[in-house]
Length: 501
Ligand code: NAP
Image (cartoon, rainbow, N blue to C red; front, side, top):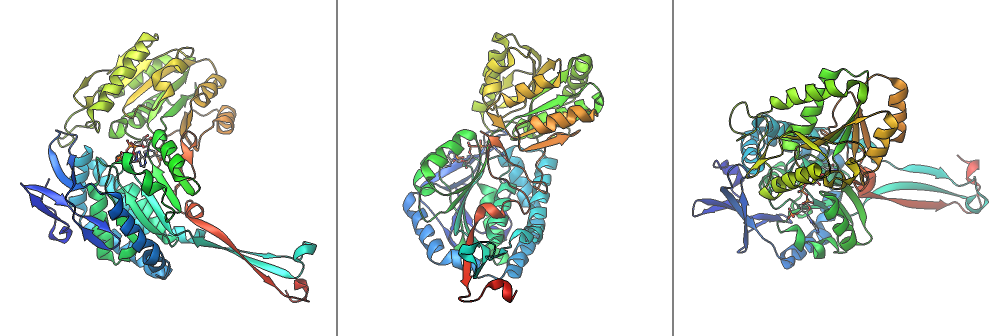
C-alpha cells in the first residue's frame, strides 16, 4: 500500500505494515489486539486494524448516547450540509489515496474504484435533496367528535444512534450513504465496516473529522461480525442499517429485537429477454451486469430467461461478449474482471457449477478457478431443472449465471418469483403489454427496462422484498426509516378549532 498523505496520521507502522487506530466518539484509539487486512489480488498484508472488545465499544456508545446524539441534532441543518460539502471536497482532494486502497483492498479495477469515489462525492453533495423529506404534518381535529377542539402537529424526529453495518463490496460508498441519510436526519452513527475491507471507512472518518463533523456523534468500530450480537442488541442503538447477506440480516434482526431496521440484503437478479429485444444491446448489458466487479454486486445478473424465438441468437451474443472479458490482476491494463474477495467464494462457484452439471446443466463458459480468480461462468439449464439448483436457492456472490429458454413470460414470472430473494429484475424488449405484465407481477424492489440493474448513488430508491430485505435506500427515501413520528396535540378548550382557522 502506498504511503497515505500526512493528513491521515491515524496509523503508525510496525515491521513496515501500517497499523490503524479506530475512531471512537471523537477520539482516535489504539488497540493491542489487531486483525490483518489483506489484498485479494495476491494475499499480501496491507494493514492491521484493531479488533475491539465490547467494553471499548460500550464506552464509545455511552459518549454517543449522552452527548453525541444531541451534538449532531443541535448542529443546524445548514451547518450539516456544509460539512457534507466540505467532506466531498476533501474526498476529491484525497481521491488517489482512496482509489489506491479500493484497488488493493477490494481488487477493483481502477475505473471501478474511481467510480466508487465519484459516487461517494456525489452522494455527499445530494444530501441537499434528502432534507426535503424531513418534514411534518398538520392535522386539524374537528373531523372527529373526540378531537373537536384539538389540532396536532406531527413531526419527524431523529431516533438517536444508527448502527451502520457495511459489506465488503462498496466499502466507501455504503459508509458515505449511511452517514448522509442517518446524520442529515439528526442521528449519531456507529459504523461497522466489513472485516476484509475496513480501511476506507477509517479514512472517511478522518475526512469527516477534517470537515468539522461533531466528533462524539461518530464511531467506526472494527471487530468480526460474529462478535457483534451484544452491540446489535444494545438498547442505546435504536436503528440498525445493514447491507450484507440475507444470513447476516436474519442473525442481526434476531439479536437486535425491537428496533428500526434497514436491511439491504442478498439478491442476484433475473434478466428477461423478450422476442422483440435488441439482442446485441441486451447481450452487452447482460454481460456487464453479470461481470462488473466480478459479479460481487447484490444486483448482479444471475439468471437469464429468454423467449425461445431469440434464445440461440442471444446465447451466441452473450458468449461473444463473455469471450472479451479479461480476468486478472486489476492493476494491469485491459483487465476488466479482478479477483473474488476470497478463495472460499471461488470454491463456491466451482461447487455451484458442479451441482448444476449434476442436475443436467451444461457449462457454456468458465466454471473453473485459479485461487480466488474465476472466469465468468455461464450455465445452460432448462426451466424444469433450474429450481433445484444451488445457484437458484442461494446467492453465489460472484460472476455466475444460468441461461434458460422460456416459452412465455408467465414462465419467467414463475421462475423469478420462485426464488426466496426479490431485489431487482431487468427486462429487455419493446412489447408494452408483456412489459406491463412483468412490471405488475415480478416480486422485486426495482425493475430496469432495457438496462441491467444498477443502484448507483441511489438517485432512484432501491431495496428488496422477501429475503432481499426491508426498507429502501435512496436519496430522500431512507429518512423515514431513521426517524420517528412524534405527535404534538394542542387542545384549545372551549373553542371549536374551525372557528379560528
Ligand atoms: P456479509 O458477510 O453478510 O457481511 C456484511 C456485514 O455484516 C459485514 O460488516 C459483516 O462483518 C457483518 N456481519 C456478518 N454477520 C453479522 C452478524 N451476525 N451480526 C452483525 N454483523 C454481521 O456480506 P458481504 O460478503 O460483506 O457482502 C456481500 C453481501 O451483501 C451479498 O449478500 C450482497 O447481496 C449483499 N449486498 C446487498 C446490497 C443491497 O443493496 N441489497 C448491496 C451490497 C451488498 P464481517 O465482515 O466482520 O463478517
